Image 1: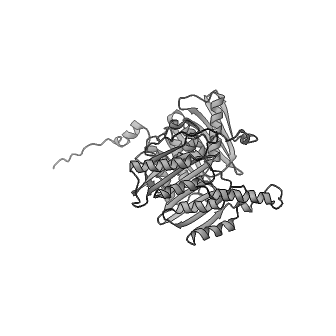
Image 2 (image 1 turned 120 degrees about the horizontal axis):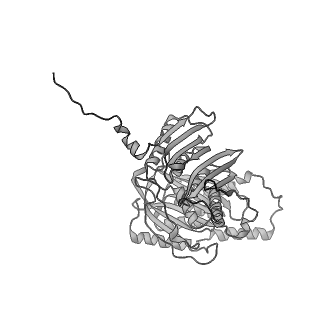
Image 3 (image 1 turned 60 degrees about the vertical axis):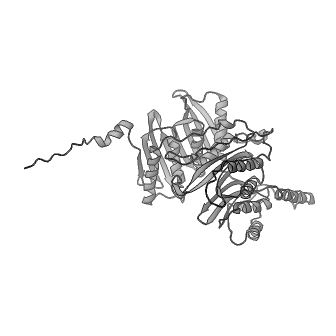
Length: 483
């Protein structure tokens, strides 16, 4: 009888990488413990920025984080999140639950997020445009999975905001034969940050010709320089660089995080005038925990979606490490408490450093809060569509305070938060007729958060005098002739 020999495999061999490099990320999703929400537990070896990546995964799936407990001391990461879906219900779709586990596990396996320094533009008066090749990302569930066949050029812009600026940027790109595939713009404290993804009008591919990129940059710089900085003084020539904002195998910087970084670089946390700071109630306070060497950041504000992402993103990009945190919400208000140190291991010691953190966090909270009407316009995609839509908005005396423009197949989906340039209520019926008249029946318009339905706190005013009416019409007329 022949003897059969088999190689010996040590049963401990499979766990060798885990014993060398630490345990793999454990994600446990519990639907039984809590009645009104799903509990997501994450255990892993800690790394800088991991909390932000986990919060980003939950936020990208439109999950509401109603409560959270965070502990990442001594190199270990243990977080508990109480989440609901966008309708306020527990998670019941097993596919979504599996996707959460896979996405968080992928975040754990990736290297730390690339930090983008803003030191290249320390002057408050600077206006800069950055161009980079960018692979498009699907936003249905995983915004970090690239489409293999699509490639565009990303342009970053920051500067002093003014009425009609977003319309002028759109018109300038259309004149330069650029198709705007996607664009996102935020306006806060008289500053504007915009990230646009463009392609060549004729080839529908990325623009990589250096001379043409330089021409686009010069035209956009001219448009952005037309406004004097709110702090006064002139503007410097913008810094231009090419780098990969998104892509590669590592963790990516999302568009919203980049907008936060751009706003921080132009110091939007500084109010245009000291008068605007008077009478404002502070949402952020900072205390010291001398026994443990932490700084305790406490936040109390109105609750809203993506709030935790905004605050964690800001602290991470300001190079602070969150060791412990407690998040909760009640009666429409959010309560957040973070125990932090700087990456150098020290707590916040000086009053100026504490004041800067307070201002930056309050700015991050306010950037998404838009007082105005949300307009959603859907139309067949074509070159120059965004320029035409924003022109109609401008000619109707509407100022864009936030914009999200995306292309889905042959359709262009545009969402704008707008307000009247003179501070009056928006006549939605008149605006709808104007859109149909200018754009034709191909445009579908939806209005949300109509401020005209809200009761005003000021007493009822008498009809406008002739002088008021003339001033109001002149404002609208001059606004419509902005080049």
